[in-house]
Image 1: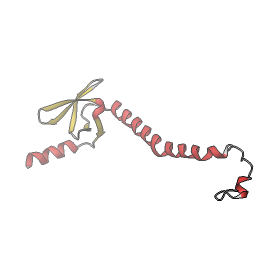
Image 2: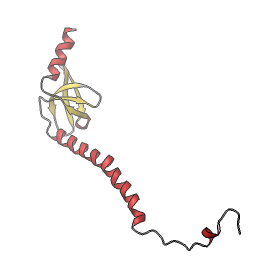
Image 3: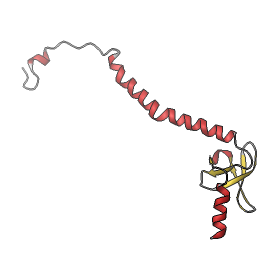
Image 4: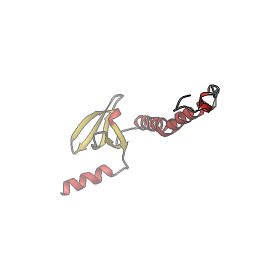
Length: 115
């Protein structure tokens, strides 16, 4: 007899391999991660694609670099944005992060001119 293993453990029969019960916990973790990470990310991606498709001239936008401006011209890949009076930049459509409410661009440019 061994000092570290009791007689009852040494004589116990081999247990059966885990069935469906053994798969429930890993499957539960996968479902949890899907609803926590993957689903919200795909929803955000879908919303951004819809926003970019609905963009038109005159819309006020913010780029991924944080630049606020008004859309002056757009094509399939690029958007021309007015960032100040007669100052334009051209960015890719995918770099547009959000659309701002009407009047945001005008309110910001008035504050800058007064200062």
